Length: 109
Image (cartoon, rainbow, N blue to C red):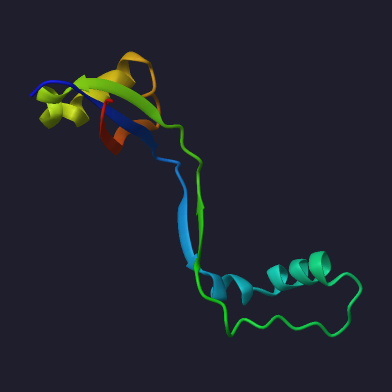
């Protein structure tokens, strides 16, 4: 195969946070309700939040830096290994950050 691939990866650390919860559960919290009423109710009394039509999910996660690497198409099978080597070479794997996650593999145009 001829050509190159663009590999996009991120570094995974032990302290990374990822929490996923239904929006209905978030709105059931009294402190969140009070904050919403204070911010958007502005002087209204006896306000009630209607969460019966609420759907969706709230995700709280650590913002990750994305890194790119260009490799020959022939090295597709070694993409993860090459991404790890690139991260080590650029000193991205250190301390609690010891893994690489591939996010995207695309043809170079």
